[in-house]
Amino acid sequence: MYVLADADEAGEKLRRQFRRVFPEAGHIYIDRAYREVAAAPIWHLAHVLLRAHFDVRIESFMRGRGE
Image: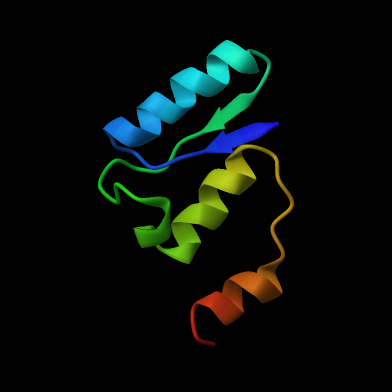
């Protein structure tokens, strides 16, 4: 299980809850500059997911950029 939450206080609260209930869960972080997962550019989300060893389909990435 992985947790991808906003980079704000609410996101940290959610992460703490997950750590208590699911201590084995991995946590994926976005850059604090974006604050919300929904506000992060698709290229940044692809980068953090790749860093966490997720498979990211390049076709989906390109479509998300309007190409």
